[in-house]
Image (cartoon, rainbow, N blue to C red; front, side, top):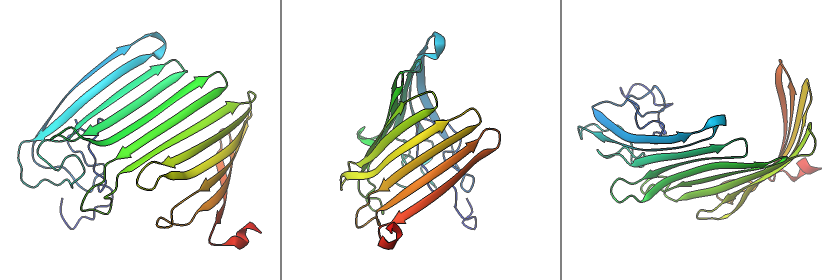
Length: 240
């Protein structure tokens, strides 16, 4: 952790169910967690035939020393006793699935972070949903709670053609629609083609709204080629 080593890949340190048991909870190689700590948790699950399962995990860690803690405030690791983290996952065939993870304050179990991903599929119709919540960090540039929900819906018109749409909503301090997309996909034996129109809706403080049209061409065994046409609200002539 020499100060002469620039910290480029280890800035976003965040305890979660995937790394609480790791020797070092930094995401990259530019910083290494020093000192001694003990991690403990419990994992259980029920697994059936055909890949069906439900599993749960709950864990926490404790630093044996209180000196030279390298983690920033809000990471869940800035105190000797880390935040409580957990994960609940389930899958039922190809029809239903979910993954929910959380981070709770070690002092009062108040929510610090929630993430949920789920899907439901009924023959040709599929629904995907994602929810995210992160508590604001007082004294930093991210002092507001962040909360978003994203939903996507797709329908297989035939074995080769699929239509899809989706939307991202902000539920935080300035609620509203932030992104809307519509797309059409083609899947052939040797060729795949995807066209997506995306509308970004931002606030005055976060930037300018924009519209993107993306075309992706895929050749099996050779890779994909993608072309974008971005249109920003600052340049009305782009729409001519």
